[in-house]
Length: 98
Image 1: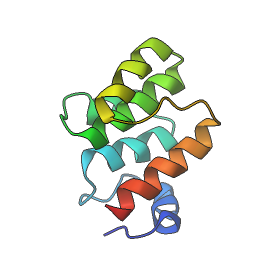
Image 2 (image 1 turned 30 degrees about the horizontal axis):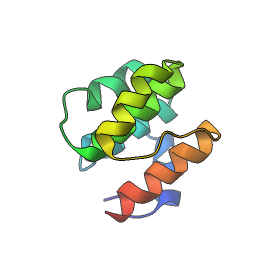
Image 3 (image 1 turned 90 degrees about the vertical axis):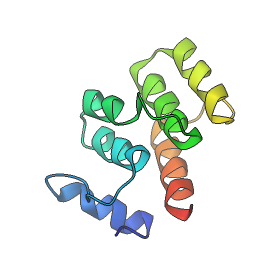
Image 4 (image 1 turned 180 degrees about the vertical axis):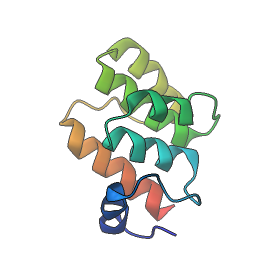
């Protein structure tokens, strides 16, 4: 089980995410590995605020800010405007602490 951001980041050297990861964290894992499509598949059908937050981030990465805004609202999160890597870290910290 991943318990810290450092361990989560270290797991990026593995071939796949830990099977125990919930879809939002698995989505963050896949996007960090450069597989946006797989990350999107992990969260697109999930109906949790956490999945919506990752979904918003993914559409921001994609450059689709209108769609990202919709998903930020679904997540109950403010629309992010800072650096993408900082947002990734913020989401990871929040999800790992939950």
